[in-house]
Image 1 (spheres, rainbow, N blue to C red):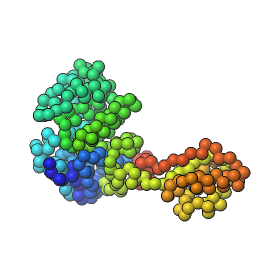
Image 2 (image 1 turned 90 degrees about the vertical axis):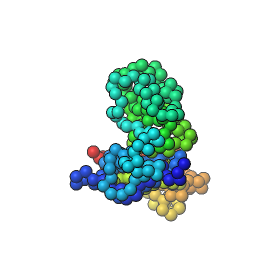
Image 3 (image 1 turned 120 degrees about the horizontal axis):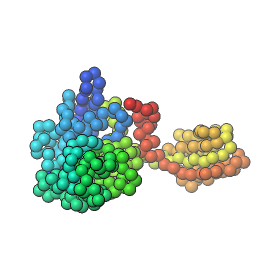
Image 4 (image 1 turned 135 degrees about the vertical axis):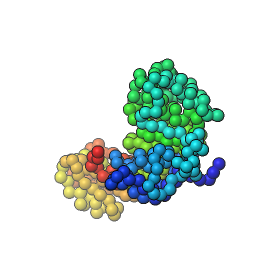
Length: 308
């Protein structure tokens, strides 16, 4: 097996007319890991993944999948790479089990189609034509088709869109099993909880460029948050002087207080806050400790405004 990473991108550029979808992006996805590529709508992540899959050509820069050029070496990569598309690609009249068996026949050591149908809750729909499957069932069949050949590298584009909670959990379990078996997975998703749960490494892109990368733990850091309810309009300046430097205390909405501590929360911090409340003659209600999530980081880096 080559020592090359699963995916390596350097200085990638792609434009559509006057719109630059990808603007000098560089990133790396290691073998045997789940790498989540995140970004708001229009960030360039779909274009980047399609170039990695060989469906589009880059204007500039280099892209390598398993050490190979996705366009020039497409034939060699075909049996080693699995691609799950959000829609399309499966004949509307194909029955789920028949289609999966045909796909499996193209590979020397495929997964058992019946096992995949069972894992993804499709056994009862095995004889149903694709067009009559629900949206969630079609999504799960697309996932099964992408992985039935035991690919080394798997591209999953929004794999749990439209799935109910049970199907989403089953899909997460299957992705975790694929990773444990040694597969390398590139995951694009709008579910930040999904990325936080599954990914070894997260790459955040915006406006076609890399804005952050690291493990979920590295990106969220050790910062802690303490929330409580009390009388509105309390002066928190005295509390801030008793807390570590760079701490933040704010009210919003009225009567709801948030304390943010870069170094996290320990028993002494909790005692300081409750003692301050006692000095003010107020009872801290609904007191709870929280940590920053990947969603918090994502919104900080890409903004909170809606995008088309």
